[in-house]
Image (cartoon, rainbow, N blue to C red; front, top):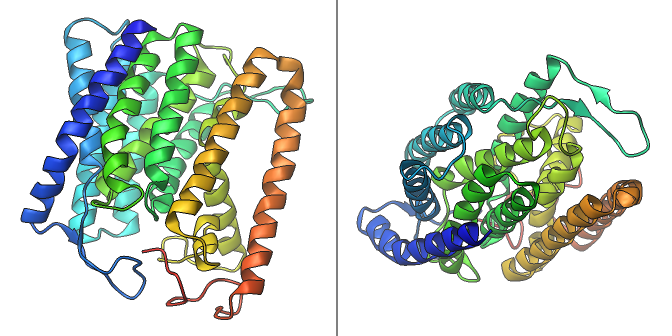
Length: 363
């Protein structure tokens, strides 16, 4: 545990030192997010701050591997290679706006290769109160779907100051602590490095943004968190070390918001890849809350979900109450927010969605 804490502190120091220099470099290179009709910022802001997280993390992973700090080679290599490829994909997308299909192809190949290298199928699906259902070979497909899906969900949720940064920091911290308690030193080290590296970016992005994360950061971060969740549930295999839903609590605010939004847009036959402001966090901004307040609400929800996961870890009899009660509360809150925003806004597109160009856009 002491080594993990030291790794997190060193990576945090590296991120804090690198990010201001990265911001200056991005500005000089004219890699900027130019304000448009949907933007909430009025001045060009450098985009690509996710490199301030990824570079210290990759360097830290390389150093730990070089000194023999990992007990295995496959999983760290899968994480590092996958994150690096997705960072390149994100950088190109930030500059040239790739088509959704081309992005999806690369993401799918990366996810399949890294899940295979890491040996991370979803072994079983277990809901509290029901008999676990073994997935068999379908577990590999389920893992692939989750990694590709959450990689894009994290990207979709990177829309207001600090939101993605807090999910990266808190989600990775939870993974590091959980893995340390479970004796998984490899995941603990990788997650601790990621949590520490997130500090520098978060300081530059919240509450006032000096830099935006960009796809160069959001794609690999979503991938890394998804792989961490799979590692927690897979354990050493072939039996799940934890129910799949349990580590999902580490990223539930992002997963729940994005899942609701995708389902809502599917019901209304809308393209999920087209820019929109239908996410729950975007609806809160449209309703008049500041970016700071919305981000703090989500950060509080993240902490509550993480705490619930650790309570379930220590007290298994409470799992049905936490799972079903939490699901009911989450659903009720989402419905309440949607109803409130519909009542408080006047510009809509005919389906109860905030209209493009409406007041208080996100970005």
